[in-house]
Length: 397
Image (tube, rainbow, N blue to C red; front, side):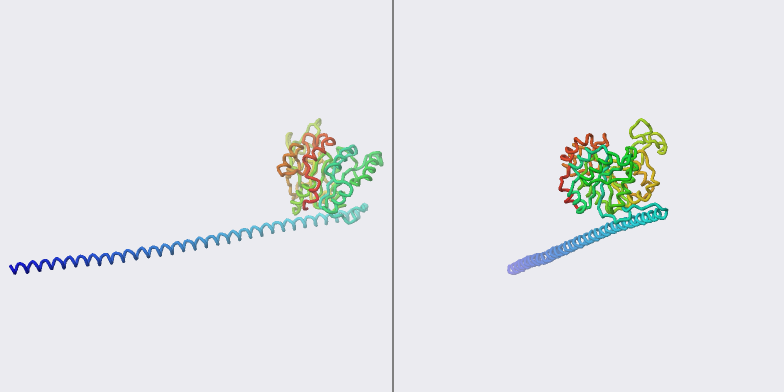
């Protein structure tokens, strides 16, 4: 019995040792498992933070590069714009000098050939920004008065406009076929009262408008050293402030021809108002004229006015004055500028445009080639479409 009891004790002791060994092994395994699983988690977290920081740095770097490139692009575009403007100014200066040199040569040739040179040519010219010639006729006294009562300043204000803003305005008219006639005396008396005429060495007549246009530019460019010369009819409403602002935008450009560009049909029928006697020069029936500014109002730069003055004797005259002017510039490097705000309709057209912030330079009725019944209606057009009397004084030139 004693031997069996000892064997049982030994087996029991062995079980306990086995249990203790298992418990120890389990605890040791848990310890190692916690250590090895915790460490990778911490390392992954650190690595994730590093990656996020790298991405943020890369984004900041790319943003800086983009801003730097954008700034460089703006600088380059600014330089290009400034260079273009400088080239335009240089081109205009060269063009003006060439025209003035040609004018001097022309004057010298006249002197050599025994032709007397007028005192206006030899006197220093007056500086101005724009000379506005309002085309008128002997029979248009009421039209002139309606213009004086609306958009054209009078008296001291007319002189101030010339001195302070460089805007010269004159009614342009020639003389009658009979020397010192009653018509001429009536204009002399009117000029004595208002001092707002430019008398031209020209015999007045509706079919002589092309010749009158040439003489106006030749005469005015000999008196005024202006940047622009404008011709406008006496039955058109004009906003002088908008005219000056519009012209100022194109001041740097050489050889500038500004107006509402059109290309109307060449009328061969002798019974039509705007019949073209030389229609055959424009090709087949139904052809259109070349692009030219409508005759109610247009502007040309000083170099083009000088060109007309120099070449006046050989510039061809067509039946229609606006066509003639356009033809004189064919073959020249001329900037044709289509300004649609120079040919607005009368109210409500110009009124709606003004309310929308697009004030018109000039307004008239296409159906009448001017304002229909302008003597009666010009005040109403001015009241509804005028820019305000102070605008011409506040606009920068």
